[in-house]
Image (cartoon, rainbow, N blue to C red; front, side, top):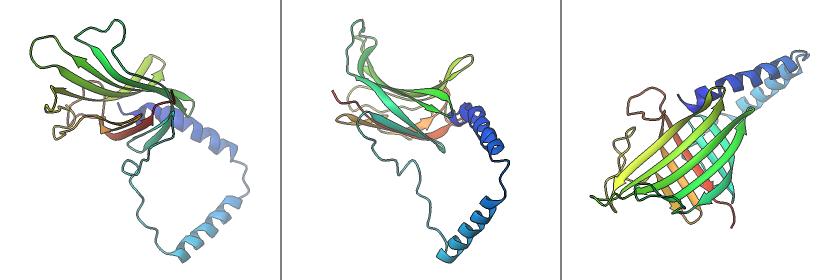
Length: 207
């Protein structure tokens, strides 16, 4: 299920409340709208609207922004961790993790971007990069995920939702990360329902 669908109920509720609050308007907005229409007509046609995913810029330190489909979500980066962590095993060793949180229309969502390495001692180590945006629901958190795996340095990256990818999920430059991928329900594959193009850009907090 896409994040847009998860937020639909909250967004509709906000729109309904806003409409009710404006129910007693005397029509002034209509006149104002007519004026804006006239101004637009005089100015001529507007240029093309920039693509929200392509035009997403790097946020300030300690901040993040995600665009999933048509939804843009701003969030606070709570922490950036670099592994290994105490208790890590060779089969699951943390290399990097960014976590964040924010709110939209009264709903709390979380962002989790991570890179893990698995080395069983047999064969080439496997690196898994994952980005998840989850929202709290009555029956627990629900979310959408992008994930890519590769075996060994310079190995081929695999993404079940996008077989044409040939690069890591996480583009990391210093303290900033940039994730651009196809997001979907956990375990989704190319062609499944609920897939959305998305991008996450975030900057780790200052030390």
